Image 1 (tube, one colour):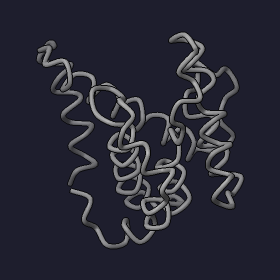
Image 2: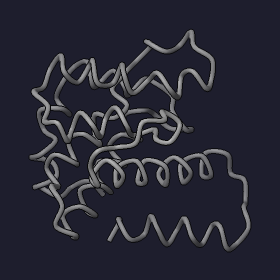
Image 3: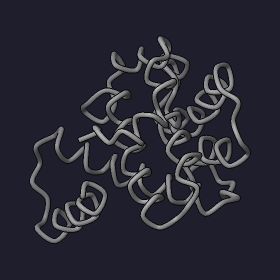
Length: 163
């Protein structure tokens, strides 16, 4: 699925980062945080390229949006949702020079939970794709059958990005 050479070129330095690869061992939505981040980045790449947004910044930030390992393990569920974007941004800045768009995407990807709205349309796009991917992953990890209309909507939305 993620074999697009341009996508892989955009993400190569991140995907080869040893600390980023630790996400392969972090459970997240029934899969790993690495798999989730890769899915969000790929769907973001497909969408933002198709609709002529800044797809390079969006793809890289989408890949980095959950770049944390155990920094929030001691926090409760809601506090973890609010705090983890800060740690993702800190970790991302350790290794990469980020644009203002990338920073905004990473720190605001949990809006409206994080309260402060994004500055850029690209941030809203990644936030939405992350939400859809998370719902999709949770549905598939639990094996719960949801109503046909809701499941069809998720398949429709995710199918847009797969093609």
